[in-house]
Length: 443
Length: 142
Image (cartoon, each protein chain N blue to C red):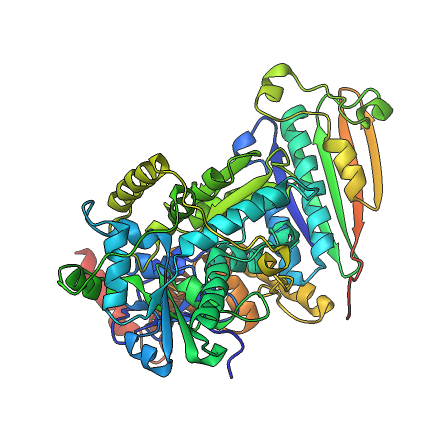
């Protein structure tokens, strides 16, 4: 079995071997080899940046299909809050929930409800003693980024489960109590805007995931649209309020917690900058950092069908509308044990050159030397994201100096010069002809 | 092995670059998480001190399996009273620097806190030499 599960994968037929994804990847996890993108397993964090950037649509996310529902007696859909922002303004969340039932689910459990429980738990947690700033655990791509590039900050992650897991746990409990189903009869499916969530289900941070599968938003979008118009679709009540639904966009978590000092950052490259600052000892005046790998938050996920900015307006309007309504009373679990992330998140030393530190230092020295010698144009033609990464690849044995087209050209030039030099050298028995030619040329 | 970086005074836009590169190098070498964290703080604060107070400086990081040594040599006004400079909150940074959020007088105390050995020598109107050593202590199971 492979060591890491990844949702993000490559369609080899579509990949042209361009280096757009190679240069955009936040963990330098992609190389081009033999005209195809190659993902370095231990470095990939499934953030989906490559899916967004690929001009050939060659990067895909593995998700589950609706046919998987047949494997269970009783199926529950967990719509991510960002789903509500994917439809026309006159389509209400109540209709969307109804449409989910219509396409084959037996029940719905809003992830926004889990988000409300998490918001309360966060508020409580932040009022206690903790390292500052605490970092949100909600975005799995950010957590994986920290495992690979910021292991020193892992202790800053709030030890609270994600709204998705909390909701799945509550949904299962409800199905067990109301209908008496056993755990393996119940199938819980997250309606996902992103591949990182798929990975978080198949390879969870905690002991296990309560979710059985993840269905891509863009895959079921068409069916939902179709179903909205169907006369058999009935509306379902929306139980969550503005606080929970708002989690679907950047800034929503902070809004839901309401007190303490917060910072919201979205977009993986911006997050890297902020994490670097925290690592240097900065931002200790902030209590909570909400960090979402996608620009705009989950509504900007690679599997969300709607344009991010359009979705943002719709989300804003929905949240505004919901905040005018009185909060519905709900019985959410406040049991801290249930909400706690039950396993520590450990570093993933994917950048290490060698297990032996002495050998690794030697290799690093070699990397420095080779980098110095490369042109420093970071053109990406070698298939590595930049010259330094090529130097690393050479030292790791994954690449050769000749991969650099400038280096190759240099060698060709030297060779060409040698050929010319050799061509001028003539055996002593000849040469008179050549002299004559030159004289005639002068005249 | 050794990494070397040139630092320019008042170049805030590039402050932190040397520290970031050192961090990545230490990750590639496979240093302990805690060693990397401490070294990063030491290198960054030292780098920033040159940017804020000096005209120019050189930062070198000497990497060996058991320790990292950060050495920063600068040309600048120097430190008149080292004992005073080591006090938390004491700063000679001008107000325009403080307005940018720097120069809170925590740089040297932070460096001291994060390093296992530290030496600071300075000559007024000449410059300052800082040497800090961070041991690479193994944590957890080997």
